[in-house]
Amino acid sequence: MDTGRAADFARKFTGFATGEPEPAPQWPASLFAQTAATVPAYAQFLREHGIDPASVVTEQDFRRLPLTDKDSYYRRYRLPELCRGGRLDGCDMVAVSSGSSGAPTIWPRTVLDELDIARRFEQVFDQGFGAATRSTLAVVCFPLGTWVGGLFTAACVRHLAAKGYPITVVAPGNNKAEILRVLPELAPHFDQTVLLGYPPFVKDVIDSGISQGLAWSQYSMRMVFAGEVFSEQWRDLVAQRAGIDDPVRHTASLYGTADAGVLGNETPLSVSIRRFLAGRPDLSRELFGDARLPTLVQYDPASRFFEQLDGTLLFSGDNGIPLIRYHIADEGGVIGCGEMLEFCGRNGFQPQFSTPDLPFVYVFGRSLFTVSLFGANIYPENVTVALEQSPISDWVTGKFVLQTPEDADRNTYLHIVVEAAPGQDAGEDRAVLIAEAVRRELVRLNSEFAHYVPAERQLPLVELRAAGDPQYFPVGVKHRYTRPVS
Image (tube, rainbow, N blue to C red; front, side, top):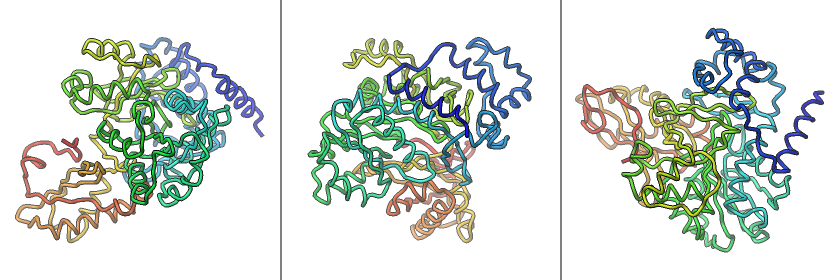
């Protein structure tokens, strides 16, 4: 029995419960030093790159360290070697995510990691929802099981309750019928009710409740999202249907990953800025380098340290597997709080919310590699398997484009444009067969897709286009398997 773990938990929880700020001195250099000294895989990684840990003293030294990612770091070492002390049993839980081939990626964690992340939930529940003084029913609608969303969220919100917030958690997961069964029984006993889930699924719950005659406004609804970028028009629509009259304060999105939990969260300040930019694509392009509107959150650099590299994000953070300069491949960037407020003021916008004084990170997502549907990452490799089957392989070139647009009611769906082989018919009957094959392979290969996406939403809309189609498959141009929705 490791009595030191009990002492660590008592110390960490006391700091969390008393509101003690997270330690910031010499961070992230201190995290680097601890990781180099206690994680066998990272120590070996540094030796292989000829790096003496003692030579890394300043932030400039830190920024010269080699990047890590799944291929260069995670997959090269045994799982225990990636953990502190080379011990997997030093972690008390694991989360599993689907890799590009559907093979599981395992991310251990400890209750101490949950306490770090609980501070992000506290920021949402306290500053946005006023949960310190209002009894709150938190309904966890993320999938339950080995995936990170459901159990991790339930644990973090329960830590808030243990701290003294009048919060009660119920976790039906992504079982819509169960949500709509238990919520009307419980919600009348609380001042407010919070739905936490992937954006399309939460909308589906709200719409289904309305069709069953549920008056959401009677429950003083609040919402927490994660996993996907959505528009401000979408936020307004779902808030209106849920009876939420202040979507700036009463909805919030989280930026999270299976690799490291929640990295940042929307605040009333970030939401108000995003809503200002939603009507000014020219300013979005100036600020973000793209007219698209990304997810915009704030993060605590004492907990997660972000860097920007060639339009993509790196982060460092302490977890069951500590990660140093980890290249998550999300498109995005970092903006200081002062810089953001100066930009807003220069362009005629003065946010009403002045806190928190934390930097911003913006995220477009992994648009070069995947699309996301109901929080499930969909990889090109999953679709390729379906197109390689007979007789489909006789009809197509193997090129395709993945998109997740919205229909007229702002429901997201999977749209796949497939290139027909030269001389082959691009008829609707073949498109239907391809759609059925893609769904079958996605369910078989991608556990997130199988468990996150409701069965009635799993069939993609497939469109066959002639070989060399100038819009999707121009000749002589390097092909991209995903593209932003126009």
